[in-house]
Length: 279
Image (cartoon, rainbow, N blue to C red):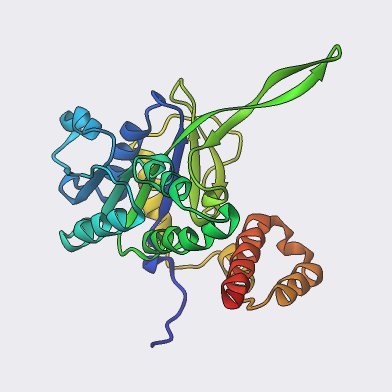
């Protein structure tokens, strides 16, 4: 172990692109990746979308690693390692949704288990967590595309229950977005909005088209050697070792309330750790 001064020069961006089919997630991910490294040969695409990443070969000579079913967390981890060992600087996972809701993914595996449905999740959660941890600790920038679908709720109108659209829901485990530094949502018209941003580069609710310059801005942020106060503040949250300590921090420092997502993520982690201790 070695104690070093905090610096974003050590940071590798972990970014998620969410959107429905046809919104341009793969194309946008490639433009972002090129902006991050400025070298197509240093970009690797982990393709679970039936070779769809080859459709954009006209952009540059990037590498593709085709992954077929079963889409287990372990196969994703193996694919990430292959890309890292090949010297890639940016890894695009296209798409991360298959690990959750694809052939051989965790939902399918869970449905085949016998016994109590709730307690069976204790067999799957660690596998999913290991993949997430691999993404977060990768030596490369990682861009993960995530499919989304229209979500509806039943609302009462004139005494009748009618479906009402309430937005898009990512096809992945709930809470996955907490693990990424940046989350972009792309609509069917290829417009992006930033729904999570720890870099403070992208104003919320601001529609824009993702291009290479977007990746360049993120790369410049990573190269800046001066840590933002926001980074120092969130470190306090993740330093909490118990739920009581986390609640105490939340109550004592109201200025940290702007990082509710980070509090939620750490609380979920601590709860799961407590449950696994008793199992």
